[in-house]
Length: 189
Image 1 (cartoon, rainbow, N blue to C red):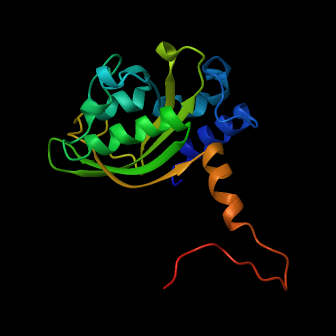
Image 2: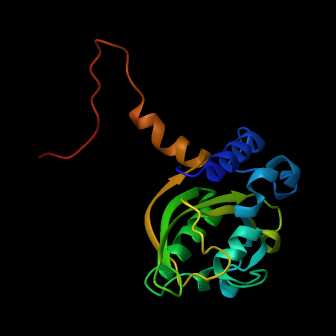
């Protein structure tokens, strides 16, 4: 993660989740993450509605020149990126796996901006209350921020993060003791 806000929110999320796949939505205290709130948002996990914003920080809203509450998150993305973003949110919801991704956009004057997207799952016992918390932050803050809105976002490189991913991947790659040979099942070359 390149952005300090992403690292800070991820560290807090990790602390709150403990050994579970994700923390409960009610366990997130805004005061504990006040330094990142302007870059943070919460989405409702409702694919039919495009995963609408429940809350959006002031800097996130300033990027687009408007209040984002109840606006579909998927709608902020270019048509070519919308299926990828929908897949990322679906994986987040079904597998409780977070994502960190690069994003790019241009403002109305054609000036480019690089951003970082962080999506982290929040547990809920009721599907209608399913949420994700995230960060959408510019890697450098342009002078025009808040005065010239961004156009559609494009998703770039991405990777999954989180406890359930660690449980699935790490055991296969655990180091063995020095001097021992490990044989992995596989096909012939």
